[in-house]
Image (tube, rainbow, N blue to C red; front, side, top):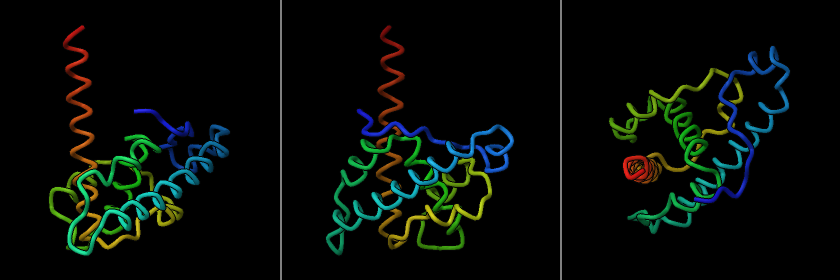
Length: 143
């Protein structure tokens, strides 16, 4: 998968960034997280026909932002909306395991798509990520 952008995902807290003189990297990463959230919302809008989500709806977002950032944004969304019963139990549990430092700006990259539809997008993302991991393991095994 080619990465259209190369803004590194910053997973440290704002406090960590400040202490290590990395606030510009942190800010740039937050901006990119917001762009990723908007791309997810757009992909969901374009891929949902009122009943079903197209099976490859996550692909373009993954190609533009990479697995790591998409996972981070989806994990953040699930953590922000953990009270919402429209997300599947398995997606919620998956989202809980993604480490995201507490910050007041996290709400800025919380995906606003309808939770029941977004749940399908998350499942699609997880399937693609799992396939990518399997391919990677096969490549290592073949060496």
